[in-house]
Length: 70
Image (cartoon, rainbow, N blue to C red; front, side):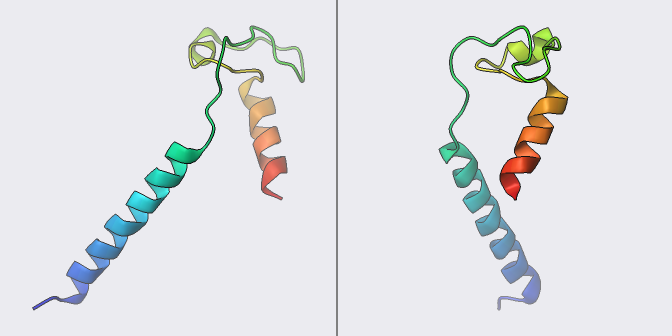
């Protein structure tokens, strides 16, 4: 017999799969990263540059992403 816990777990697993699939479909930055932010001119940390295709420092990227959510 299936109880509410089993249904909740199945629902959670389905939502996780959907979220992961959506993340895989999001375009990833490509190409070399910049060393200076295109918005403020501040340095982009080397650990962030390794990701590839990075053009903004973390504060500017956060501001950019918040603006795109509206």
